[in-house]
Length: 508
Image 1 (tube, rainbow, N blue to C red):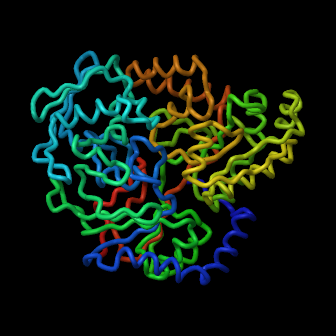
Image 2: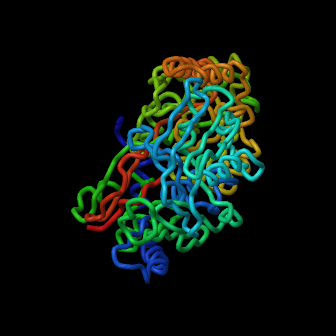
Image 3: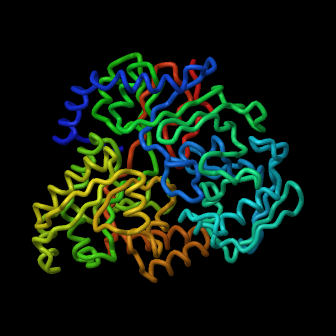
């Protein structure tokens, strides 16, 4: 974990937050209590910031929906533990044939969906076939392109046949792409979520809260709390106000780390610091001038002081990693030294490209870490001859539409939290604008090889993309910061997936 001094922006932010603390606390607390007034004893209420726009991750991108629903409501055949290792879930075991293309899964028995439907091999066939259909539009569906056929051998055995061997496919099945559905439960996915997990959706208020209730008929170990309510706040200030005011029991994914010292010094609270898979990526649209010129992209890499960005955006919490690959990935390589902070090199490259003195637009989502990071980037680029005009965008609605979907941007920044998502970032048609056949060839060769070949080729691919081609600047890896009332237990410290496991959360 890399920690460092606070930047001046972060210090100023802390002062402003402290000043406003008393002014906004009452409103946030009153709203939160409305959702939990009749909660059963032992219920937990958590504060988060980025709210899902709906409950349908099959057609909506972003991490907010799977954060709340994956593992808690929807489950997969295989899951990932805190260390990134594959573990059984709805598949109690699996085996792979000698060709590496046939996966036979023995399913858990006695499993039902929250609407009473039985989970069987037919459920698996339906779910995986649906990912490959027009019903799914989420870009992560590409992870299922390698699947040739899904067949129910009997009620509790299913065989998935791949077009070719794939090192990545089984891991892909641990993500939202591998979520299991029942045919009768997909009619209203935007507002209703029906899965096999330990919770069912009790209530959903768009942009405000999501309440999960413990299932008494759950096939595995029951959830520890009878009810968990996720309340969404527009900013970390109101979230921490709600914690201090007693409206919530914890703030998960704390985005105002400068407020942590006041909680660390108070025995009424517990502060946890862990790791995530959230790479904060400053994207440069590789298909739009001036970033269609690799010299300009390299100039930006040299111009931005990533340590200062992390200091200002997260008070020094986080990790510098050099590419969009977290240390939990098997092909991780520390590339932080590839582009050291060097304004002189940046100026020279901009002059060579003929763009010194140009103005570019920075499309920044209204998320605390993004707006703080943007201020450092603007200052650093101005020093080397690029003027940056910030265009603030509402997240998720506007940013997802303008940047992610329509690619209407030059420069942007966002945390990509999906595990092992580097190939998604580099895929043709994705918003970074990378369209390099060499990268796609390396990806295919890596995926089809054995484990050693996979790791070696993936490292070569990542170096080509993030060092040779400088397709994007990975600013830092997000930490997982949680502040909870003392006595609240079971919140995960590390986050190896997008899912927030709520099954063990309880109050002692």
